[in-house]
Image 1 (spheres, rainbow, N blue to C red):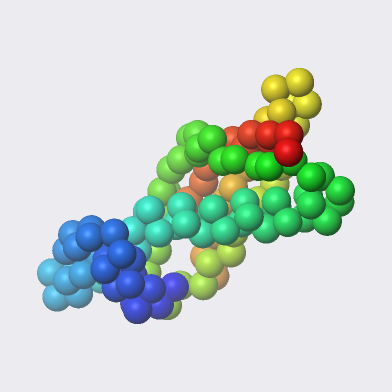
Image 2 (cartoon, rainbow, N blue to C red):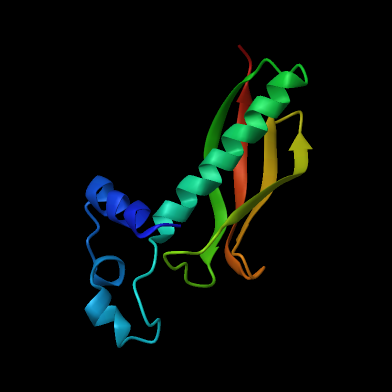
Length: 127
């Protein structure tokens, strides 16, 4: 995570709250510096879902996938500029009758600390 990533997300989203933009104010906060937006982390979760879709297609799935959302989404630790993030996307169930899959998504930092979690719900529509 680079400070420029956070700044770009500020410009894209319009969310210019001081927690993401004002290093001076945040230096005296309990965080000690600016932090990334939770919504930016959801973007990383979405990218992991896209990788899972590509893998499913490589394995012969020709459906049209649609993300239905994220359940139990939580931001459990702050993400700071300079953090290295890893996103793990693990499909935990597939309901063929409802054409849905559920996946656990976990983002960890360079120390192995979990910073965000969610359950991704995907609908697999026929072509």
